[in-house]
Image (tube, rainbow, N blue to C red):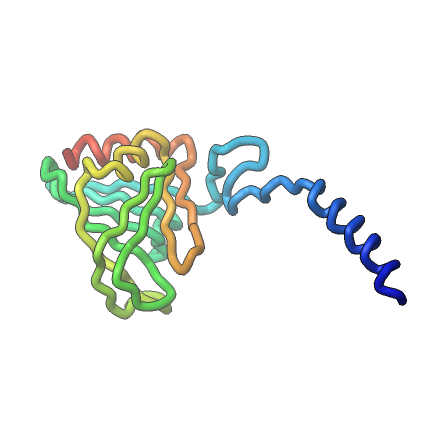
Length: 167
């Protein structure tokens, strides 16, 4: 094929490509028609209180399958974060409604499942937790992948109670 015939064809294809628009695909766990994340069947937030120790865990009810765990002493305002991870890491990266925070973490092999457990310290008043308290969802980032932990409507009261007790 002669170059003089190829150039107009390439220009036409380029012009069409420039005019094409593609809507971005919704993020995993996000509803296509709205920006609200969708709760996952079988997973939810569960609050537990044992004396002054209060915990809030996201996972499967009555099991060792926990994705994210928050622990505090009543009234302290201090949190211990434990997150499940596929591999060792030096931080826990959390996001809620646009607020993000990275917490320096220690990593140790998990006992009840494959992978690692990451542990970090935080404050209940950190913007990411204030937003989580208001929205009922938080996301954990690992290797550019975002995993959403969304409360079902019935669990939102437990999230509020957790942060009220923790201070």
